[in-house]
Each structure stands twice: as C-alpha cells, then as structure tokens.
Length: 153
Image (cartoon, rainbow, N blue to C red; front, side):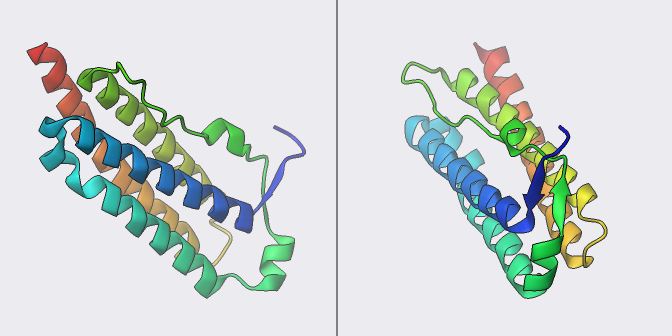
C-alpha cells in the first residue's frame, strides 16, 4: 500500500494491543476448556513477556531523532489486526483453529516488521525475530492440539 508511513511508536502500540488481546484470548480458552489449561497455561504469560521485551527494547534503543525520521513505509497495520472474539457456542476445535490463525497472523506481522527494521540498531529487529520464532513454536503446538481435537471428534 503506497503512501502509508507507520512510525516505530505506532508499531509498539500495535504490539501492545496484539499481545494484550492474545493474552486475554488464551486466558479465556483456559477458563472455558479444562483440557487446554495445561497445554496453554504459559501462552498468556508469554504474551505479557513478549510485550515487555519489545517495549523495553524500543525504550532502550530508539531516540527521538530516529523516531521522528524512521517509518515502516508501506506497512498497513489493518492487514495485521487479529480477531480474538470467541463465539459463545464455539467448540474447542473452533477455538484452537482460531488460535492457529491468530498465531499465523502474529508471526507474519513480527517477521514483517523485523525485516523492515533491519536498518535500525540490531537489537530492534532481533527482538521482533525472537517473538516471531516464539509465536511460530506456539502455532505448531496449537496445530498439534487442533489435529488431536479433530481426530477425537
């Protein structure tokens, strides 16, 4: 999308919302489905740690001058927004499928901003890459749970 310029501060705000929504989503899954509690118990806390890692990295490395002049040109945050509203009648498999989709989208977002931020101090893209890898491992675990839930249905 041409003409879109997203500041680093906007990326950080988006990440804060993404991780807060993700954590709340996983809290809801563990409350609604006992069978998910053990497998997903760390996902909510991991989201809070991801948020802290990225925000801390940003605060430690970004100067006002860099923030004012750097933008993630062409990045459309709307395309990376996630839906974490779980329907009241959703099945466990539906919830897991939604979680897999959430992780796929989050992983693509983190990978995209890591790639786009390569020209910044190395700590910034490294933090984004680290979270992308964590979320990819989470996606694989969720896919395995989904496959097992669908096989048992």
